[in-house]
Length: 99
Image (cartoon, rainbow, N blue to C red; front, side, top):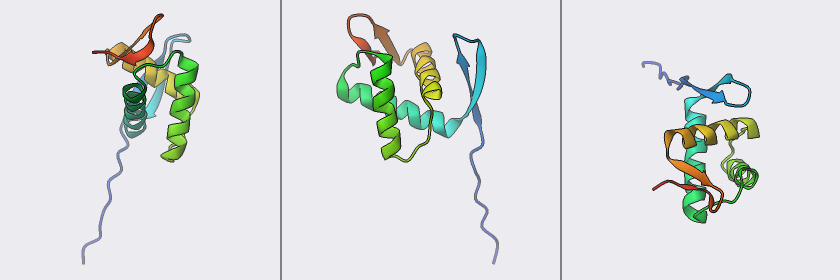
């Protein structure tokens, strides 16, 4: 009988911290999961007024899905999604999905 080999997805995504000019490597699967949580929250809520509130909701959802992540990584992922044009922040509406 042949052994079963499980492949792990070890690809990393570079996320940049705009304030400090640093680059942080995050596992791609973690980035994808957090990005999906962000988009689901903004789809369900229509908009979230502040980054702090969005972070708290993401952390709650991540705990339910048994994902360990820090606020710093969440902020960097949100900034990356914003830079990619999937979400946007406005003073009037807060964070929302970009249509």
